[in-house]
Length: 371
Image 1: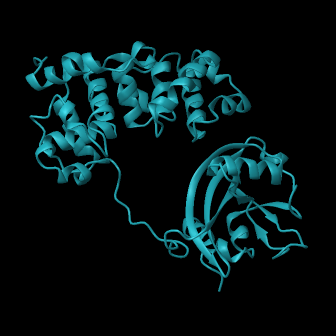
Image 2: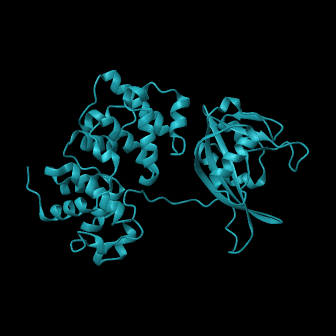
Image 3: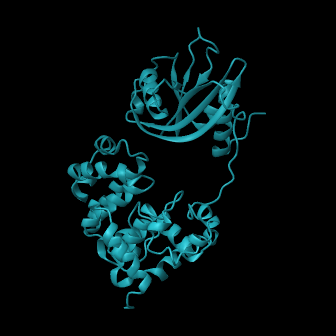
C-alpha cells in the first residue's frame, strides 16, 4: 500500500481538527450508513440530522424497515421530500433480508434495488472500509479547483481523478475529509480559501474565474426553456398562486370550477393564492386540504411562470404532488373532481393562465397540441 503523501497529510490533519460530529460517522453498520446516504441525497445535513435520529428510533434495523407499511413509512419520511427515496430504501432492506446478508463491495451492493454506483461506493467505503473513492459534488468541486480539472470532461474522468487522489491507508477518513472540505470550506458560492489546507496547492485560488465555473461540477449543463410572459418590471404588484399537479397511478387530478364563478365549468388544478406569511409549500398544503380534504405527502417544484391579466400580474408556481390517501379526495370547493390519463387531461379546456403548464406537460408526455 502506498505511503501517505504530504498533501494527504495536510488534509487529514485539517479534518482531524475541524470535522463535524455526525452520527453516521460513528457507525460501520451498513443499514445506518445507507439510511444516512439516502437521506443526504439532495438534502442539507442540518435538515437530515433530526430525521435520521427519529428514523432509527422507529426502524432500528433493516428488518424493522422492511416490515413497515406504506402509511408508517411515508409518515416517518414526511418533511424530507422525494418520498420515493424511502420506498427504495425499504426495497433494499427487503432484498438484503432475502439474500441473508449485505454484499460488502461496490459491485455486490449495486445488485440491490435502489442502489446506484455512488451509493454503492459510499456504503462499501464507510461501512466495509473498502479503499474506493466516493465522488459527490463536494469532492468533485475540490478536485476541479485544486487540480484545475474541467467539469466538462464528465463524471467518469472525475471519478478516476478521485481514485488517483485517494489516501488508501486511511480511506474512510480521507473520503470524509474530502466531503467535509467541500461542504465547509470549498463551497460553491463563497469558498473560504484562507482556511483551506490546500490554498498553496490550489489552482483556482490563483484563478478566481475558475471558482464560479466549478461550483457544481457534476451538474449537467442544460438549456432552460422560458414559459409564460416575461417577468414584470421591479416593483410591480404580483399575486402569487400555487397549483398542485396531483398524480397517482399514472393519472392526474383536476377539478371543475363551480358553474356560478368566472370560467365556470372549466377544468383546473387545485390551488390558490399564497397568503401573507406563507411560503409556497405551506400554501399548497393548505389549499389541498381546503379544496380536497387531503393531506400532502410530497411536493416537488415543477414550473414557475408569470401571466399578465388585463388588471394584474400573477406569478404561478406548480408542484408535482403526492397525497397520503389519493383515493379519498372529495370536491370541497368545486363541482367535481376527476382523475385523468395524461392525454385526456391535456384534451380538456383550462384557464388561459395555465397554458405554459399545459405546454410543459405536452412536452414531457410527448403529446402533440390539438389541431
